[in-house]
Image 1 (cartoon, rainbow, N blue to C red):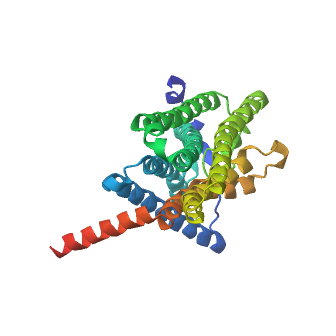
Image 2 (image 1 turned 120 degrees about the vertical axis):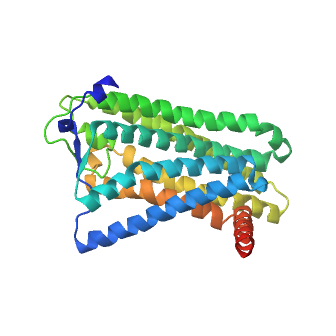
Length: 315
């Protein structure tokens, strides 16, 4: 930390960004701003609904509240700086600010990946072992699951942030991205970082494939349980409860694998920027919409909240 604080203003990085001031990019920027606003409001609303409605105080919605919290922090980590730089014409970010962006981004992506895997396990227990569900997914177990998800992400984020920010950087220090993305930053290092990049690649494989394997295994057992159900209606209901999670998982893992598991020779900065927009803004917007519009309990809580506000305003 002392090394960071001793950095002078000349050690700032330059974020080249993703948008120019052309008419087309102005439209795209406006779209991103709308998506960012919806993501912000959607996740805040979902958090209020889950914590404000006693009927949503179940393991599934507790995990969903943590997912919304992660998405809320993620969308606020990189987008506000991008917006300020675009509107003011500035492009710089401080050394410390760059390190914080890297640490938060890696932490949140890692934590969310593990949480999605555990949420798949929660659905497996609920469908395959409904009678034992209160014991297998007790409050203590839920807290341990959420705590371990955050812990994995935080440890990974802190380690990568500290290592990346101790490398010497030289040249124009221009990061070809709209935030301090780690792989883009490593290209500016004055020393060979290939060993570290290989370690990071291995870590990404572990951090993605472990929870992804839990998800695939959980849904394989869920499908088996559904096929063995005597009631077609019960099977249909079971699959309906999983559809929202499957959609969120597909969006998250699809984008993450595209960015971090491709060989280096296939990486194109322009492609990475566009997928990062999808990853850091669009997915956090879609998650609350996916889980609310396709979920009767959340919609009921929303209607209940709106009725309460309407009655209060009349008085």
